[in-house]
Amino acid sequence: MSKLVEFIPNFSEGRRQDVIDLLVREAQSVGGVSLLDHSSDANHNRSVFTLAGTPEGIAEAALRLCRRAMEHIDLRRHKGEHPRMGASDVFPFVPLKEVSIEECVELSKRVAGRIWEELGIPSFLYEYSAAKPERQNLADLRRGEFEGMPEKLLKDEWAPDFGERKIHPSAGIMAIGARPPLIAFNVNLDTPDIKIAKAIAKTIRGSSGGYRYCKALGLMLEDRNIAQVSMNMVNTEGTPIYRVFETIRAEARRWGVSITGTELIGLAPAKALIDCAEYYLRIEGFDYQKQILENYLI
Image 1 (spheres, one colour):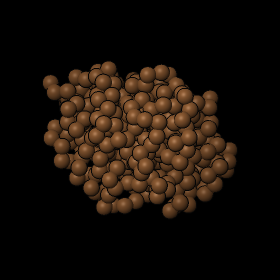
Image 2 (cartoon, rainbow, N blue to C red):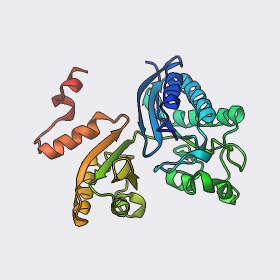
Image 3 (cartoon, rainbow, N blue to C red):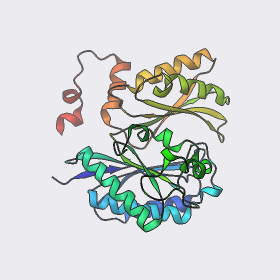
């Protein structure tokens, strides 16, 4: 069986379609790699791609995509709702088939080394690739964003894992690492008051006492004039989507607002969504493996 790695690069560009199309073509040009999905958001000014391929192919795709992003994305002129510190902001590697998380850690280090040597972009290693616990959390690494990063890198504890203590002038600095699958899931509220979204995000995110495997921010969708709770669900076995959704609904009700809809960004494991169906349909004695037709056939 061939080894398969999932690669989910996040780019700080969600508005210029010509640049997004260029990145799509680059992703599709690498042998041994398939572009499974890509989505862009103008309010966040961010694009998320999902690729799968051999470790060698993924490593080559990562370098090529980072080079293209460096050439066409200038963070000195970038504005968007989503926090960011790099043109290629986050490069996560996820084991899919016949690959261990340890192999993805080594892959992340090889990619980070090549990006520094060939493109001059420094990086932090995060999640399973982090050298110490305080480097694991992406939010901690990105705090200060592009504008505050030059000063941050001068502090003893924030030397990049690869590169010098200075950001690339236009492409900034990156987070690169290995991690388990996560689900990017957003909930939209029928209010333009971003303070409500931020308060709800604080209630549900693990770092402020909420759900252990939920990371959340309150953001504003300017084109729709509504606030959004934007989440990364990093372990839906430990914290199911439906549990967080119901908490958001209850908290929104306290503020006198309701949920208008939700968004799934990129791909998600089927079981995470089937768990939601099982919960809301109250299916008794449900067997995920035997009662889902596609699973049974596979």
